[in-house]
Length: 146
Image (cartoon, rainbow, N blue to C red; front, side, top):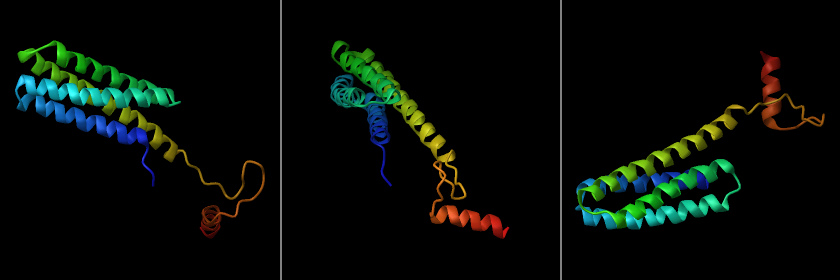
């Protein structure tokens, strides 16, 4: 079984966001700010690259929104300080996490839809020839035995 790169990236974005949520509350504002700057820079580059290189519009939208949220977090980490920075890092990390989770949900919903739409035929193929697959023959034998 092969994992989708979209699935892997969305999970990485979610883990990075969860790390920043904890870092914002556990560390001082300056440490959390610089950590948010580094993590957000990584998320921005990876998400933007993924959005640019893909051909699917759903992935472009999902990863584009994650990249924009991470870019804002990167700018906020440099522009603000003190308590405001702590809460901005916290809120921005939650925003990135929610967007990554939404994109992950959209990906899984479309994948699940494909799996549930899989239909096994009795050996007839679209062009009229008969398939010799064991799944098709096994299904036909089960129906005749019942």
